[in-house]
Length: 196
Length: 196
Figure 1: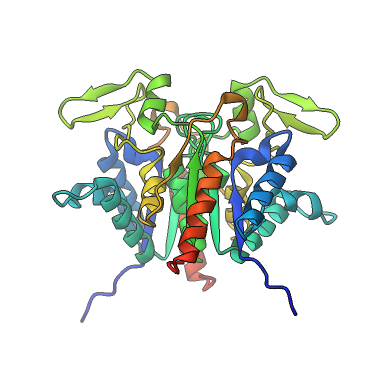
Figure 2: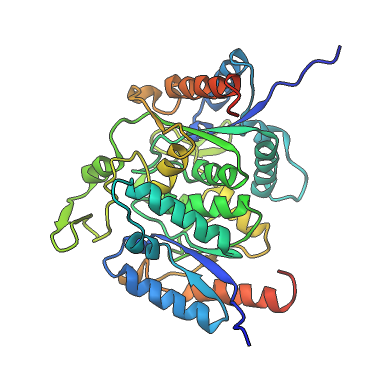
């Protein structure tokens, strides 16, 4: 009897930049398997895909795209990375999957919202006329209580699973999988209830 | 005789957060018109769309999505925003348009590449064993000479129009339209040559 292929998930996030990225990827894939999914971790591409003379970045991009096109959904780690915002590679992938009409789930391991994180690095001031907060460069600060730029939060909220927020310890900032597992649970529930 | 509708372009970028965002939007739309396009500037949504009781962020998101779905292509301002990376809203939109199979163009007003920008804020160290550069948190630094995370640069490069790089003066960091106009010119050429 042929084995039924498990639905696959694209696992985006800045943990690919950790020294122990492979171990985090393996932990994510094991959790996926426990929930009946196959996890596709982008770093797997970086190890296998190299041909002489080819631009490695283009090879990795194409391999990641193929993984995303195979996956039924993505779970994206949106934990702030090198500043107040999420890793742009992961955000690109979130947008790409949304553009493909696929389910996208997101989590962050920092509980402070976007405006609070900007306020930590900037003296914010209230523009009395417009009622808008601005940072020290005069740039408007989105103040919707969201974890990220509204395009990210709204994309997830309108799919009926807002971003999962969890305050992870600093030494597990990118590797903590509490929020990741919550996303997996939500996805498994949606599949069981027939809404996906 | 009915007027032919000009093809429309989605104009993504962090200039929506400037105090004079409307003026920058008007300047972008005027340039689009000069090249035969209609520019769709996301801020236009924030002003018109409000219904009582609705979450404003979700209304803006849906209006931006409708603009992107109408547009034949996007031109994305990828100038670093509040840190080393591009505005995540703009990056989401780049990914979304790529996912929809549309043409995407990008420009940045900062000439220093990603690794150089990270090195300004971090003591980088070379991991001799793997040959990989890491920042002060141990996170890998992509060193492809790219302006951004490889997903962004590769997406544009594989569409045969790599990111346009231009060093704008600091007081015009988000508003300088030199790179924007180069993107418009490339797009107009592609349409004239029949490759779009």
